[in-house]
Length: 198
Image (cartoon, rainbow, N blue to C red; front, side):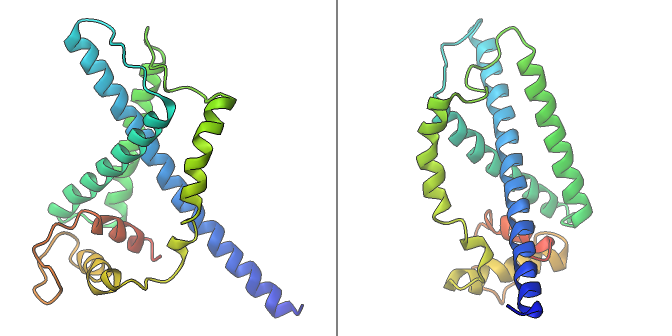
């Protein structure tokens, strides 16, 4: 193997590792934000019920609800920033850092309370084995984010809208793109990825 091909392979490996590090960091932040949200909902529900609720979430459901609510909250934060025309890397980074700090503080407070959630703990071996099929199914699509956009809807309106929002610094209507008045919730995630020049 020549020196040029080994340098090319190392360059590709570096790009792959960097992209997956960002994806992993984002997923971790989604999980933490969602876990903090579930803890707040549980403590509020216990306060309304006047005591501890018999809500022992199975680990699989807790992971599912943590990640999905974390994704939704981060999309909502991006939409709020886009509405006030602050869709720039420094403001998005600051808003995400504040959201993550508030989530970590909420989790720390819940862990030190008299009744910490039983589902938020280090998983046992049996729990890890129960969650393993979910990660194997997700792993089937693990290389998809690294490939070029090839789907019709990605090329026709998801990526053009994400680029347009970044150029405008927020939400704006582009009458020349498809579906100008359609909801663009998941386009915010494309915008987040393009913000890093991915």
